[in-house]
Image (cartoon, rainbow, N blue to C red; front, top):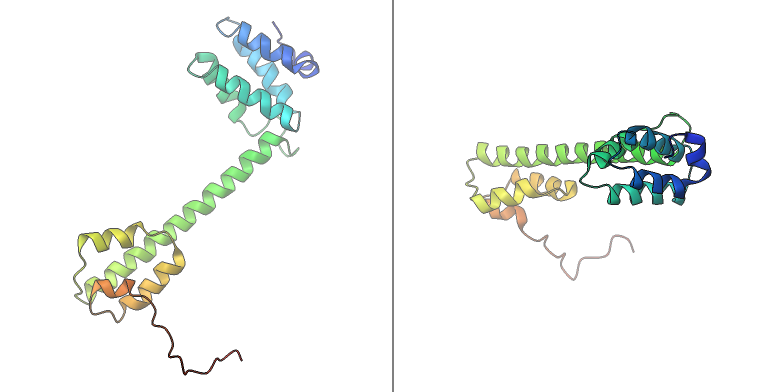
Length: 172
């Protein structure tokens, strides 16, 4: 039974075996905490390997729940740039960015529908669904511009007309 952080850090394979062997023991919390702290001080693939190894092998048990709780903390040593802390912070930032983009898309879709409603343009259910499920901000911007003049909701989705063949190339 390995309940000492230093011992766990010196021999992570044995510490992982200790976790598995004592998963139903009354001492499992101390074993998990020692091993978790030792992994959070390590960088690299070895720490990731043992984290995932135990996450998979303890899944569906009280020890597995405790393991995920211990490893969900940013770090016992905040600001040290450990693998867990970095991954957590990157995930948190990515989640916030995705949430903001999703909110902007919802706002644009809502504005398109509002413009069409104010202009008394009928919007069939399938068209409403297409607008509200779109997440591409550029596409929604184009549809918004078209909603200002469209006679029908279907005109939002019209392909851009090709320029005439005899039009001189502006870039030339």
